[in-house]
Length: 224
Image (cartoon, rainbow, N blue to C red; front, side, top):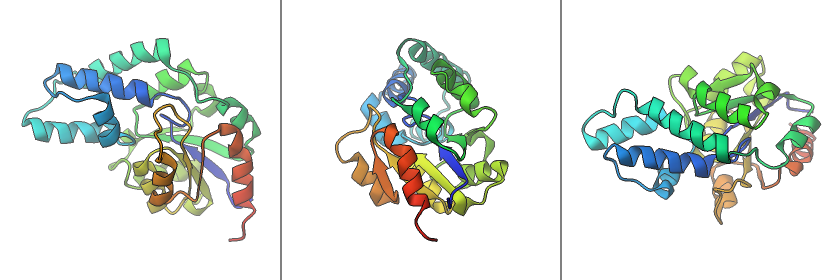
């Protein structure tokens, strides 16, 4: 095997949360004077950190969002996750079959991942190797988070595979010198999503987590 570490994005890859998240984000922003639809949130902010999104929104508003905006958003997400969130189908079986070390590198906060991964029985499968954009200076599409995750796991970037569902994530992983696989099996993925991920730099795309272990093995057998 040419790879020692599999780095998973969280939202849209481990948990099928993007539709829920975009709806909660849109509703919370709209309540605070920034009318936006869940579809617009999806197209503008998918794969990016809330911190980066808020800075952009505040610049457009010409004022700061409330100090407790993040808390309000987390509360909205928590309520929605507890009732609606599910793990991506077959992710537990895929993890059972993967022999390399695994970790999470997400634009979401640790609090959000504790909720989303906890609700789907995935938290204990990754903890403590769960890394957030809040731990680095620049979130996706910068490479910082992926490089930080590799450093923490003591694996060189060229021996990492990243599983991502967003263009910012693919872009960041490529900039880190890693191999990218694009997942387009989430409920938020629309026609053309796989092509978009390949255009951003994914070496292969897939829409069923049962395909992942064999895909990793096949890529790993390729000569350097």
